[in-house]
Length: 355
Length: 104
Image (cartoon, chains in turn cyan, green):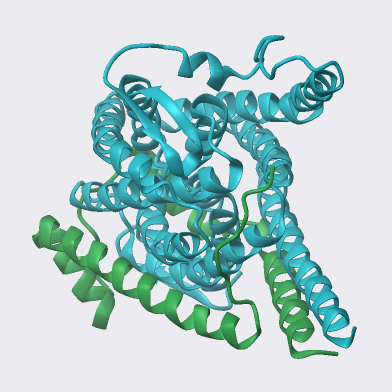
């Protein structure tokens, strides 16, 4: 680990440049593709490899802010952003981030905050991942079956009862109500949206994540956005919350600039590749990959927690392997899918031209 | 083999190879981390620092708001610049994006 190590002046530790770029690149690919910042991966990764938890929470927010700029631009060009929803969400999210970061600083004074943050990670990632897998394998096929049944028996759509949570939330009639035409939503209460983003903002500030890994499932399952629009819109929220989080954590002395700078080199390149890949993969494919990834991430953080409890270095090595392995495998899957699908499209176009 | 294939294979190889040595943490890092775990110092140690590192550490110690402003600006400028350059490279590789249909 001696080669290409760099001294990080604020954190006061030696760290590998290649590891920082690699973490950045993987997080960039995943961020651009899933509409997440990637703090849920960078924070445990940096902590596992030697960062103090406070720096491991603050530094990713700076990196997430930088990488999201290019990804948002790209998603905008693909028509994947509901700007109205994104902008409504920003003020509430920022308020949530501030509350979350103040809570974490207060808890830091009382003792080791890392253990609580890690348990929160495990809990949230597990719940979200398991629900998304359940949706993919159980709810979605059932809805398709019902829709086909309705078509076959000439029953009007929706009469047999909507099973999606978003449909129930759209039924909450607390004025003012708004419509989100870009997302295909006719009526939803502003209060539902504000509540959702206040909670995601709080979790973002509390755990040092851009909030995307919570926002994406929330936009899809609670607000009812198509997956690709949820990805782009999530990134808008991530961009603004991360910008604010970056500044506020830096003021509090929790951002390691040199590490964030180096990670951003890999992350910006990865984010462009990830965002481009969205063009080639269907919405439910994105959801499945996302669910697998966050379940594995939860497992990795759980293993890290076991290390903290038992001081057995085997757990930590295993946690690192699972985390980096998941990120590498998922990034490689996305890049391969991008290349193969692009090749397929080109050969299809060439055949059309030949005809 | 096309340039794109070489690019992707190289990227994957670099990712995989560079990941291998990193699953062990150096003793120095572990000790430094443990020290910080018990008492997180709010001042960066400027001893043995020089050049840009010294400048960053001094700014961090002396003016936190200016440090935060610099961090935010550096991230914004570098993020925009790298996105622009990567976009140009992807365009050159034929991976240009346009409006897409939203399929579930």
